[in-house]
Image (cartoon, rainbow, N blue to C red; front, side, top):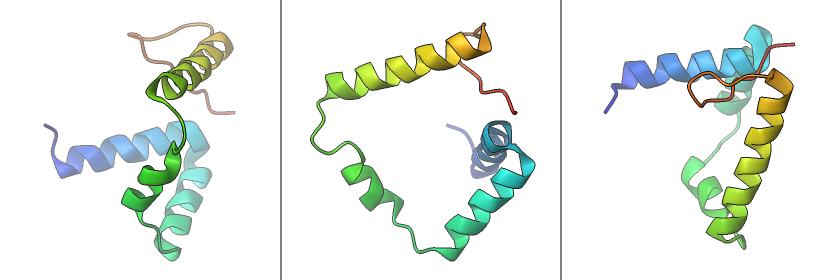
Length: 82
């Protein structure tokens, strides 16, 4: 299990790699300003979808990212900043 600090560091890194510095800051500002219940959101996120459907969708997204990047580092698809 990783520490809270490690979760924060990895989260900021993921946001920055995905959205860029400005986008990451914007995302954090939006989350802080709006009331957001992550648990409630997770309960309804895949409502009405089977595990197989969620898995197929995740695999489709993964394959799209891999095709765009052209390579996969240790089995993980990374998003390039534009």
